[in-house]
Length: 148
Image (cartoon, rainbow, N blue to C red; front, side, top):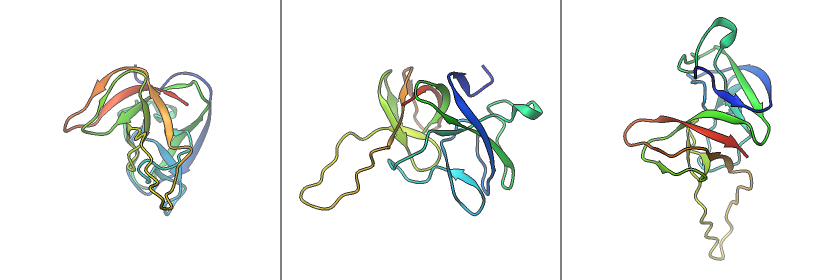
C-alpha cells in the first residue's frame, strides 16, 4: 500500500503550507499560509488528512516541504485512511483517536472533569477509530483508521 486512502469518499483540495507535512498528518486551515498540521491536542478537528502527491508520483512517505502545495482530503465518515500515530501509544482495534496537536493522532481521553469549573469541551475531538492494533514507543507509526 503506497496511498493514504484505503477506501471511502473524500473531497480533494490543496493549500500551501509553511511547515513540513507528511501524508497521513491530520491538518487544519491556518498558519501563515493555507494549511498546517492540526495544532490543538485533543481539540476539535475537521476530518482533513494530507494525501500523497500522486500527481507527481509521490508515495505516502514523501513529505511536503515549507511553501509546498499540499494535496489533502476532507473525508466523510466511514472512509479509511492510513494516519500517523504519535509515540508512547498502545492502541487496540476499536479505540477512538484524537489529535495530538502535531498532526499525529493519540488515544482519545474520555475523561472530562468539570469539577464545578468552566472547562472547554471539544465535541468534535474524536477524529477516527482504530481499525487495527498498533503500539508505538519512541517513534511514530502508521495506523489504519476509520474516519468518524
